[in-house]
Image 1 (cartoon, rainbow, N blue to C red):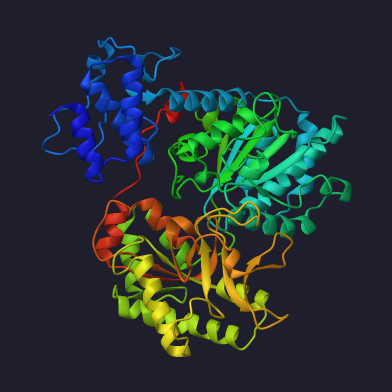
Image 2 (tube, rainbow, N blue to C red; image 1 turned 60 degrees about the vertical axis):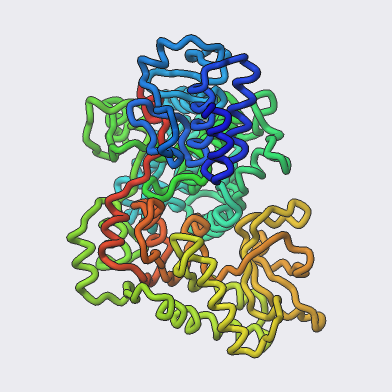
Length: 597
């Protein structure tokens, strides 16, 4: 069987996507290449990219989903590719479709994106000089006694570099720290008689941007600086797509030739940023602009290819070179020196003290147990009752009963004419998060069963739209300024008998949209853990499927757990939880090494 026939068969079986095959055939035909293994490799690279990988690591070949018994090829070794002569295959800097860079094989555009991101971040890790006495005095003036060591270290560390990372779990005060870091930057500029920085705040999604806006507005009143400094800080965060002024095709208006009009950019929920988006962001930064990433490195990686935030953070925690440690000590922050720490390591500060939860919070303990793979701590949690942690049987009936208990009163309130703001706030208090879309305990069947129950309970007949129905958008509508993942609730229009769908507005109010105008949407009673990133809820019911699956990873479980602010219920058995904890996400990439070479 020829390579073309095999790829066509793989596409027909649903193993490969049509784009994988088309890309492979197109590149091979343009190059006039007759090597069938290279045709297969291009398709494999495209497939790997759809699975989240930036490249093929030849030292850790992929466990290919399409490694069928009839496949006549294997991933070649580095030596085999190094000795192969082909117009398709080149070395770094060469204009070839495939790039072999050390033990990694890339499609050229992905190699270029990774290279440009690494260069942009490394250049910004060079320390900046500040008046040490002024830095100490200003730091002491804006940080209260309740600020912990790592919050102060994060702010000062960002002030002395044009690139920095503030990472930490939920409740560690990341946004609180960011506002003080920004105030510190402004006051240092004022002291040096420089113009105050132009600042932008952004997040990958609309939900994350809205949450960041709320957190900023909550933190500003307590900021101990003059109103003139507060006025410089942004009151609203925007999505990265809006920041870069992307059109509906994903082309940014801001790029290297037309950079952003900002001196300082902060991006929250940075774990959600894929390599391509990060490459666009760094390309759009003015040469002297600063970039600061904020997020939780233990959360899920981006939906698209790459694990940029985790690659930047690395495995070390709060490791500082001698120069960075000395600067921190000058302002009264004592940190240990690590002679092996590299500039990128010194740019990362992890906040460690949890301020949101009580000291004995089971949610916080479980999150830490998952990230540290502590099976014993998990067992202790299950065997000891906690007010903020509960367990449900992994049965669809038990889960449906809990969903009805929480959601039926919401629908009743909507039928009775409750206002949209009340309904949206009520819905945000509880959410069902499932690990998968399909299967008896997946999002689709859980939503379908609840919808059936609600129709019976409230006599809704065959009505598709009814007061209280919740929906999540599946596509963007640029005209309506509504986007994939936005959540709304159907309400009675106060101006008449018509139904409208209410969405939270950027100004804190509500937007009403006629159901017929909405893009494609689906019920939002249950949503995937992936879709919940960037959101938090007072109470969460976390549902894992009955069978083990490769999608059940440590990061998925951690992300689901940390969406809960006050109470977490788990529908999962101990074996499932242990399997998740033992399966960290792996994404082939060279960014971690490139940042540290």
